[in-house]
Structure formats: C-alpha cells, structure tokens
Length: 447
Image 1 (cartoon, rainbow, N blue to C red):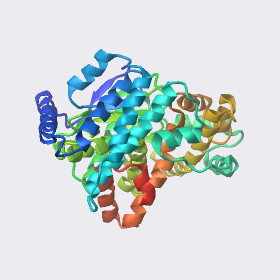
Image 2: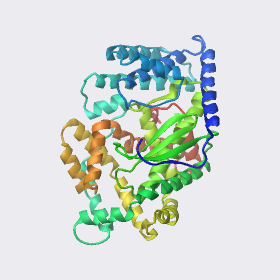
Image 3: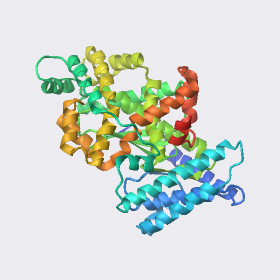
Image 4: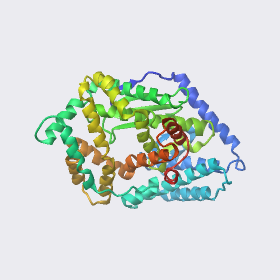
C-alpha cells in the first residue's frame, strides 16, 4: 500500500501474535474433531460455506473481506483457481438446502441463530454468483438478495433544504461554493498531522469502549495512510484480534471525520466487532463460519450498522464536541473556536445519509446519470466536485452496498431501542450481545 505506515501503541509482539493465531487455529481443529456428523450437523455445512466463499473470491477480488481460518483452505481455493460459476451456484444451493433442512429443537435459540446465519449468507452468495454470471438486478432486488433488506424510497426534495441550513453556518458572504471550499481548507487536517490526530481519536474511542465492554486479550491494530482507493477509510481484520486500519489521504481529511473514522473502523466499530465475534463464536464455540467475512452479504449490514450506531454510544454529542475542541483541534493545529460550528455542520451532513442511498438507487437503476448524481451532491450535499466524483465512483464499485450504512444504523438502533430504550448500561449490554452473535438483518427486523 502507498502511504506512511504508523504503528499504534499497544503492539502485540510478533511471537505473541503468532501464538494467539495458532491458538485460535488449534481451537478450530479441536472443534472439528468434536464435530463428528452425529454431534453437530451444522458443522460440515459451515465448513462448506467457508470454502465456497473462498472459491467465489477467486472470481471477485473484493468479495472476501477477511479470512483467518485454516491456511490450507485458502491455499486450496487458490490452487483450484476460477471454478465454473455454475458449479459454485450448485454448491451454494446444496448447502443452503442442507441448512434449511437441519432441525432445531424448540428452545434451542443458539442453533436457530446459527442455522439462520448460514442460510442467510448462503442465499446471499447465490445472488452474488448470479451477478457475476451477468444477471442484471435492480437496486432493490440486489439489496434484497445480497443484504436481506430493501430500504424505503426517499424523495430527494425533502433533503434539499439541508444545504440552506449549512449555508447559513458557513463563514463569510457571497456564493456558497467558495465559502465551502474556504471552510474545508480551514478545517482539514494537515497531511503530516493526520496520523497523530487519528491515533488520538482511536485511543479515546478505545478508552471509552472499555468503560462498557471487555476486549479480547492481546487485540491490536496498525494505522496507515493510503491513496487511490474508492473508500475513505477501511478496516482489514486479520484474525487473532488484529486489524489494519487505513485512511485514504487522496482527499482532504476534515477534522470532523476523525472520531467517526476512529469509532467506525476501530472501537466500537469493525475492529471491536470482529475481535469480539472471533473470541465468542470461533475460539469459544468453534464455529468456523465466522473465520471468513464476505463483503457483499447480510453480515455487512449488521457490521456497518453497528459501527454507525456505536459511534453515538461511545461519543455522546456534548462529550464528542469537548474532545474535538480540547484535544483534536489543537493537535491538528486548527482553531478550537471553530469546533462548535464544525459539529453543527457535521450533524447536518450526516442527515443526508438516506439521500445517498436514494442517489445510489437511481444511479444503479439508470434514472440518474453519473453527472446528475455528482451535480446533486455539489448543489445539495455541499460536496466539492472531487468529493462528488469520488462518491459516484464508489457507487460504480459497490453499488447497493451503501444501504448498509444509514439504513443499517436505523435497523440496529431500532433493535437496541426495543431492548434497552435510553438506558446507557442496558444499551451497551445489548450492543455487545449483538456484535458477538450470528444475528443477521432479518433478526433485527423481527426484534
């Protein structure tokens, strides 16, 4: 990867990291010995599912988001190369049928969740294979097939007043575009300070998460700045409680995204989610299906939605503003007096999340051109032309994946509301239960 690599504090020594990973693999091997066909009928389905995902990944480079299972399985997939899509579709159908026929005793909620997870992920894999084979689906059909949801349609006009509110917050007078450009220059983190600001934000996110939830022993991550990516920030989970977090420095990194990146990619977002899931379901229960994460699948909605919902839990508005003003702005060399205004603008821009889903829907379905999408983002999303172009390129690559953010957050928050209301302690307990479980979007909708 291009960019400067910055190792964060709390590194796990190389030997300890290898031992942690070997211990996890040993547990998987032991689980395999325990899971003779008569002991747990879902185990061979889970093994077949992992190998299927790895095989699909030979056709689709973005499909396998992470894998830390038995290395021999990854090597087997690489040696086999691109197996015919029809063979893989047949394998997905066979495994799905076996999962659906597996009996669950009344009251066995754990097995029911596990069976539902495997069935949901396998059904999604069939949709992805169909897309790889050239089948064309509408945005809604694709979202339903891959992620198990269809977000509501939105009238873009209802979001167009947001830009007027943001305009009133921008310093200066006259045309909006130059005032917006000036504001973004004023609140962008100098490139040489991005790593330090992100380090501070992630450390604080970790500290706040640890007040409410335990982390697996030895978890760690690295932080790197990269370029030439279709995303703004990314977490690559490597197993053994380790992650690689990357921030795209192609576009200016605004100070207002430091905490969202820290919480979303780190704590209590993707790094936390994967480390807890690995500890609870792989190491403790030997469920091998959680050693692989296909990007285009229902699991992604739960993961992205929980990462978005967790941000507000870790950083309530007033506390977030105080930390930005007192720590991050000075660290970036920016004026702390701008922090309250930046917070208000950031909140308004976040409210445009559902509009982004609608733009992606119309772009994928062909009712808006790329130029029209970019024009809307510039006019009403108050994006720069470079930012709008970057967003549209993201639609080209990830298409309906955008549903997993704002709509995923909506579903996760609804699920938490039903279980904990506004009680912070109960909400954190429910949140940890969610991220350490095999629940998929259907479970969130049922509540």
